[in-house]
Image 1 (cartoon, rainbow, N blue to C red):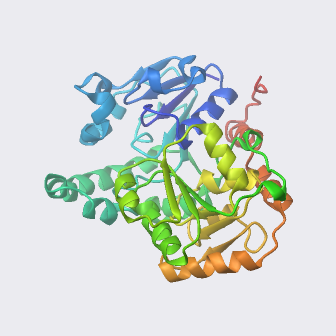
Image 2 (image 1 turned 45 degrees about the vertical axis):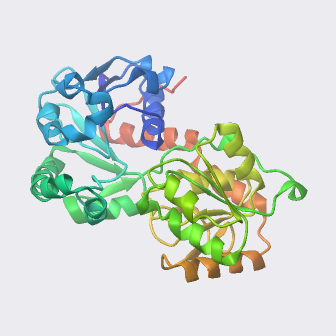
Amino acid sequence: MRVAIIHYWLVGMRGGEKVLEALCDIFPDADIYTHVCDLSAISDKLKAHKIQTTFIGALPYARKMYKKYLPLMPMALEQIDLGAYDLVISSESGPAKGIIPTSPALHVCYCHSPMRYIWNMYNRYYDSSGLMTRLMMPPLAHYLRTWDVATANRVDDFVANSATVAQRIRRYYRRDASVIHPPVDTAAFAPVSRSEVGDYYLMVGELVSYKRPDLTVEAFNRLKAKLVVIGGGEMLERLRRIAGPTVTILGSQPFDVLKHHYARCKALVFPGEEDFGIVPVEAMASGRPVIAFGRGGATETVVANKTGVFFANQTVEELIDAVERIERLDLNPADAVSRAADFRRDVFISRFRTFVERATGTELALPA
């Protein structure tokens, strides 16, 4: 089959781009379309494919300010000529699914989430924005929501990265979605012996408000327990200001440092609500349990009282209670490793490949 993959933008290698890499393994001859591409920020595997950008990529400072061009992205998507393709896969988190496929082509949307900033997290983005953005957001979001719902009818089959996202697709688009969890490179992580596990907890991720890193820092300040924080973002300096003597803020770190701390922490603390959440799976692949907010993708990966514990409300008191509960449990690292293996990369490739074969009635070649 002639295959096109539409990805919102290529300016780094995060979870969405890891999914894109796996799709490229399934479809090694696929062409990639995107609004903006920074070749210096993506993997060699992606660069090996033909990558075409929309007119957004030619606009001034597009690689850095691509989100400022969001109002133009619907028009840009609709100008992509997909007449040469039998299968179109849109990778949706920003605007991607709004392409206009030709009538014979099958359009499958792998949805990481409907656009958060116009749907489930609109108010959080609005509250954290400056004055000019606040003035522009209501009319722009209204326009984008109307377009986003209308273009859901251009998709033949939705695939969600979690049951949480499938529920959003049903709520906002009134469409059903199959669930295929994204790939996690679990083989890159390994547990250590119990004697090597340290006396500190760990928080990993981008330090932005909706992930609630402040909640974790405040809880461990009050507990006077050791916490290590790895990640960069807009809240980094604020967290350093409020961190007590038992909290160490490392900022962004190379993979070897991250891997070391994953395997040696007492537990990972995951205080935010994520669409899926790769970080808890990486921690479990390292043999460590997870303390997670009981909403979102973590509820589909962490097994209560076996590979971690949940807290129901994002309050300091409930997080402290969860820490105290996990201290009383004797969890088996092998259970965490086994659970993480359910989200291996080869599992994703097999499930997505089977989904496409059933949808198209075409047997695909096995990836190399």
